[in-house]
Length: 178
Image 1 (cartoon, one colour):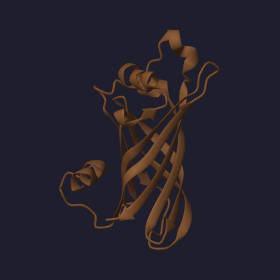
Image 2 (image 1 turned 90 degrees about the vertical axis):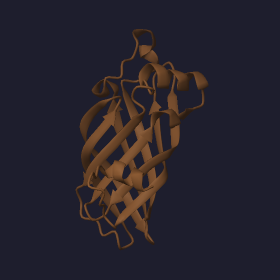
Image 3 (image 1 turned 60 degrees about the vertical axis):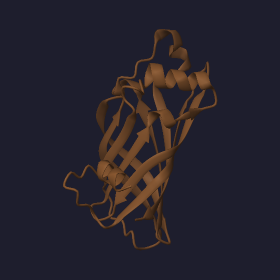
Image 4 (image 1 turned 30 degrees about the horizontal axis):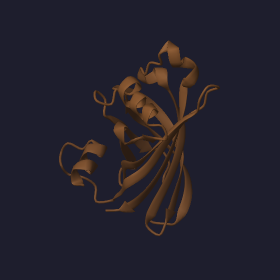
């Protein structure tokens, strides 16, 4: 577990904050709607951490953990689009801009500014979400769009009508203090 936390926060010194919250089974889903076919997938194994001292968040997704209703779609996602053997992970590392009192129950609209790496391409992103703190547990919901061209994910001309140029991503994480 310590390895995951160090990786996610990008701390190389080996020392890390004593005030962090971990999510081992976050949910990330995506949806693509086109006139020809809707495509959706869900990953229930997303790892994430919040360092409350630094107000930082990090998320790690293993691309092959996305599950589709149609096995062929899953195969195409991993082999043709995400090239999961070459780019197995997606990551986000960012700083929460708002002041959050993690010791009190409450609800916060938050913004995280950071780097999203997917398909080997890192882009700066500003992501908005809703954080709820209840009895020492943090729940975070964050929805955003990913333009495929920003991460050099090519859509073959043959299937361009079946895949949207921008994918809607939804995240739900429940963090507990470690």
